[in-house]
Image (tube, rainbow, N blue to C red):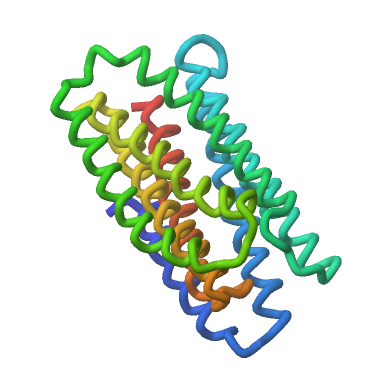
Length: 251
């Protein structure tokens, strides 16, 4: 186990312990967990910029790093906005809102970068791998439908808000399938590991967005709920992938 992997494991455990230890702490719980989100997305932004700087932001390969950096930085800006709303202004963030809209911007940037990368290396993709990635994505889509569509139909929210609830897990799922294709395209190469971790991070984001959507629709979610641990672990997975991508340049 590499030192960074051990550090990531320790951080994940500390995050979980902190959530459960502060469950009865009210505003302190909200403040501490919001800060953890800012630190998580901030670390991902720094690592994305570092990886992009080493590989270069120009040319065909540079587009993917530019897209990932802009996308991850959008996460950071969104998390900072959440922190300002909930901790500084003491305002409950409604759904949808500015911070949540910023997350949608990230999907466009990351998707464009990944599509460019897949197009450049499309020759390394076998049809069976494409079918496997799409099949896994389809199974996860069905799971999302089972868990999320029921609460959506039963809820009294308008169509526009329902579209936001559906958009997040679907867009996460698209990025997850793209990342899986990257893993298959580079299978056995030195840049395979980064995309394994990034795929794990995106997989956890799918689970997180489905869970948060169900929780908000059914009324049991609140800022600082332990279900947020999944999303923070997604940041950890993404950070490990970006760190591996940065190291791959030196290999």
